[in-house]
Length: 174
Image 1: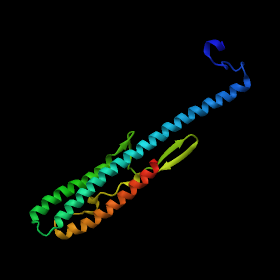
Image 2: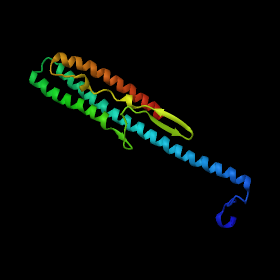
Image 3: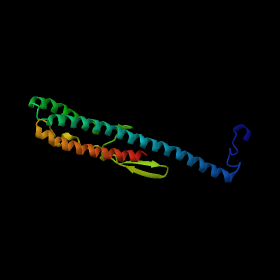
Image 4: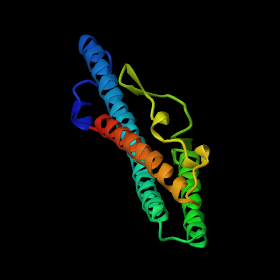
């Protein structure tokens, strides 16, 4: 039978001592393959979160540009209203990203800690804290020069926070 299958151990009676060792080795190898898949899934989820934060960064940068433009004393109220409409739309997009970013049908920024099991060790990661609150939660406007100047400061804080969170995610991915 060894010639047909190419295996030295086909039955427990072939070598009872070695069959236990081989069975344990197969179980460990199978567990390692699953752990590798779990690790790859965790990295993919972190990359999804990081990509969402890159988009948030781009939006915040555009919002800052609009606020700087609105803070310019040469703008009319009508011009500032147009700038503010785009600004508010962008702020809503940040909230939308926080609410809708998903990985494997799970909301990435829902406040839940995710437990990742690698072999027999369980690790917990929390990426929920990494999405900044939408500027609309602070009722930021750029309809006046003063509002625009205040918005610039708040947006710069948000950009700094997002950058720190992206760095945290990058460290977890490595």
